[in-house]
Length: 236
Image 1: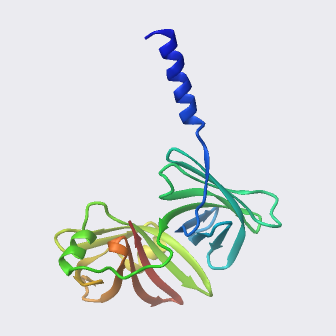
Image 2: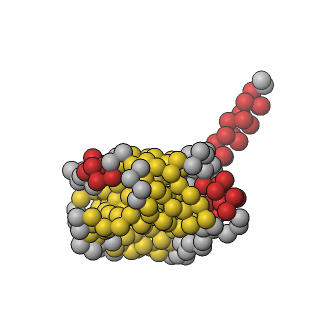
Image 3: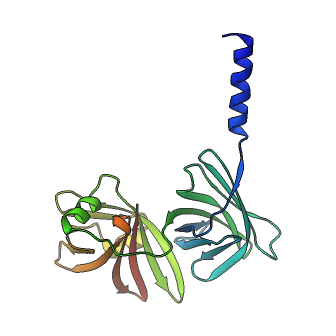
């Protein structure tokens, strides 16, 4: 390769690396977990963006809001949020074009590590034939599973492995030992009727949830136990 060609190649590569542009995240909504050192259970966390501000809710107990700036280079997104009264900025980053966000936020002086997935801010029940919805639900793309735990006004969360199998069976394995003891190695069968999905475990107990947004979001209430209200949220 000639020297001129090499020089042009390097120049174009550098332009690609530094082609950073400001973007708006207006209308974007994220849900996921906040992990704090020493905590046995995670915090359910949401982030909403409008044209100027970002609102961060941690455990439905701590709400932070401030102006944000967002820049993008290729598939890499960087978001800086300045909360009034806070000495440091909250930085959130994505390397998948904003489908996920990771970063840190300080809550009562303690760092909380965030991992969030983009979802619609307002959900619509899935439409279409039962067969089409069932096919989408059992897709090999799978779901990221969260067990939301509501107690004393707070919203905690644990991650779990959940699978809708094409043969009509499902399995659930929690990452948290305490909740695993509550659920056991939960498995059974499922059925779909329009936008409703019903799980039947091996003891015959059933729970019914709702499928939203072209089967990319599912919410299944599990009821209450030991003062905790449990809800499974599946996000694709």
